[in-house]
Length: 214
Ligand SMILES: N[C@@H](CCC(=O)N[C@@H](CS)C(=O)NCC(=O)O)C(=O)O
Image (cartoon, rainbow, N blue to C red):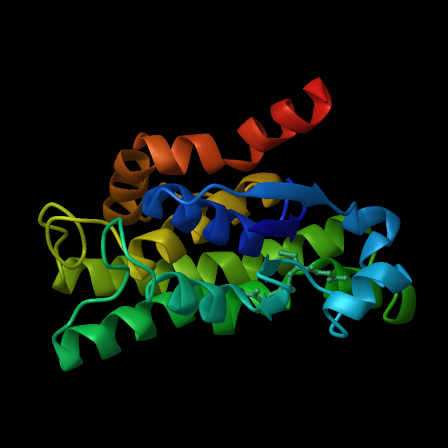
């Protein structure tokens, strides 16, 4: 499989974790989103939405991190990313959407660029905007986690979509100086997740090291 992504990309991080958890071999192709490489004709042929990740599998292309994880979950091997119980499954998807559908879309490069170029936001204002939405999302996760205590993970003995999404939410907050001290359950849990091999190996900083090493 070929993962078209960007080392900093939060949505690509989610897919990288899932591929590693599932033990699937993949190569990764980098697009510098801050330089506009998502608008290159060759990439638009893969994803007309001009966003990473895009996963190429046997000549076909899947976009959207949630759709990609859903696809990967149909393949044999590795832990199930979604619980089998219908209510748990719905809850896991809802938890994941807190970041995938709600918070993360508000802070992606195209939004930050639009704020800066068309709404007079300077660098501090753009950073504050991203910090605001990620903090709101973190507060909601803290409340949800106080009701559903990970044992040892959110939906049982193995990590899955909800854990990946939570970790990606916290990782996204790094560059925007999100203060996690009001959210001890979330930060403690994600610290534990980030120490797991797939999460650590997929981490944007680790990916950056690999890209820079060539
Ligand atoms: N909902 C999509 C998000 C895709 C997305 O917006 N990706 C960002 C990087 S994390 C991107 O490529 N942005 C390009 C841009 O904003 O110009 C997913 O979960 O895959």
